[in-house]
Length: 416
Image (cartoon, rainbow, N blue to C red; front, side, top):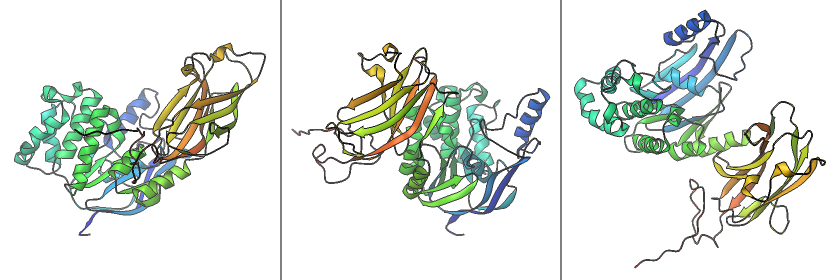
């Protein structure tokens, strides 16, 4: 185990439903207090279906992580990602299995985890360092760097219970990333912070792994971030390990299993989409385009029962589920769907888009129809896909356009 940071063998985690057995004392108190007030379990994830009297969040996980590796953990909601991190961080105990960890762990899980609300930001820094086994002198050496990175200098001597969630995350990440631990574990709690701080955190995590040689475990639904930050990835499904390998291969596997489209209705839907087609400007059906070309999206819109107001929009995502474009009928001042002839029940739509300058890769189209107030009548998620290829007439370069860029812009350079 000389070059190994984490070894997991036959890891299981069971929750007994309806019983006080959450795995942590604080959650047990929350459950008991909710019961006394006749409320639902506050620790249960909304929308999670749990049949029977027990629920296995993790089922027989086996994997090994080397020192200095950055590993992304991906999967749908309820796959077991956060449960795995909590066990590795020793927040909760496994039901069965063995975990061997070499090195100190600094973790950032739920907002506020590891902080005492009545202590100031400065006092919490020293407390977290002490928990990691650092001396007061070692913590003091890092103190100014932590405070500067967090950006909460003005409030560092204020009890953290008065912090906003964003301030909490800023300080918590700064503490976890700068204190001397061999393993950094970060859940998707970073989404709470603003965009500028998220970028700052991702840069620091990359430095922690590539420059400092520390091991990083990162849970995120932002697949592009996982690709940019992590050399390896773990895919979980229903508590089981589906795949472990190079991050690009595992992400591709996750994308392929999530690619089947589905309609999402709001009750008995009064409208439907049908016969979706993607064509070029000459009218020829195509699924492959070069960056900078024009495309045409056509579909039939069927009205079963006319609603009071109606709006249609189109979302285009790349294969990492990043929104590339949002198109609405309101983009065309001449078209108001509420003025359509309500004696008819079928309409053919054609939307022309000039100069689609997306970065090369796979794209997915989703259709939405709803009220002018945003209520959903129907959502056709990922109902068609197409590909964008590099256009060397638009971009004069022999190498591929970088995958982390979202848009291609033609440019002319001069030097004086």
